[in-house]
Amino acid sequence: MNDLFALSVLQGIREAGLRIPEDIAVIGFDDIPFASFPEIQLTTVAQPKRLMGRMAADLLLEQINGKPGTRKKEIVLETELIERRTA
Image (cartoon, one colour):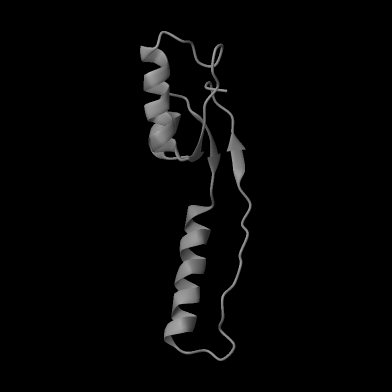
């Protein structure tokens, strides 16, 4: 899912008396600022957020301006695994 969901999962695992990552490994997705807090150290997948925003704005402007040939596009951006203590 995402890092916020993963943080809830971490809490539930700890409340169940299990150890992270010895008993269960958890990986989030987004690399939100909380993920790197010393007491959390969530392993996560980082997205290029600024690039995503820039590309989304460019696509929106193309549609607003009625640029000929503008149609549905599939864009794949690279992500990065940020290894921390939960996996």
